[in-house]
Image 1 (tube, rainbow, N blue to C red):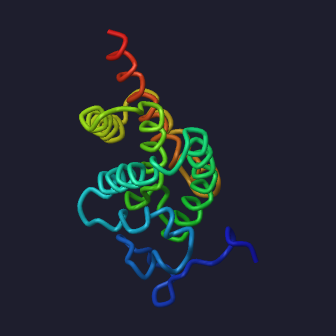
Image 2 (image 1 turned 90 degrees about the vertical axis):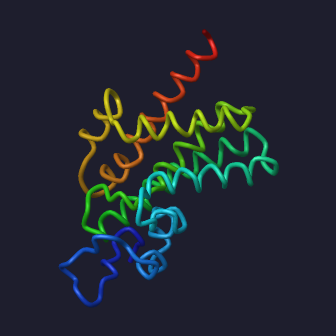
Length: 181
């Protein structure tokens, strides 16, 4: 049996998905641990913001140890891993795009930081605020990606990541325009 085709992990109420995942749910499958941002998606308030903050901290910790190429390869691998993890977790939660899945914010924000570095603390904060704005408002390419790829299966897992990548693109466009101007 493959990890992608494993049955949901709910023993007590198989037809009732959790409205909010628990630590037990997160630890029940490696995909859940990844998709829920190693626990940041369990935040009762603004899990997307918590996931982005976790991404920022993780990037700052990893940056001194990795070259730009290694960071780029890590981000690429994290995207591929994220499609799998988000697909499995969304299916097991029986929600097409649960707010507690934050791996999309993690990878998208890593991409932003990777492309804007070396940026000081204020530059990173501006990137954080812009990304959270574009991710929350969901207009233009972000709204298109969010609408087009809803559902379950690999397409839904890809869609979970795609709308945040679109928000990252919008963030990077604003930063590039600001630097140019």
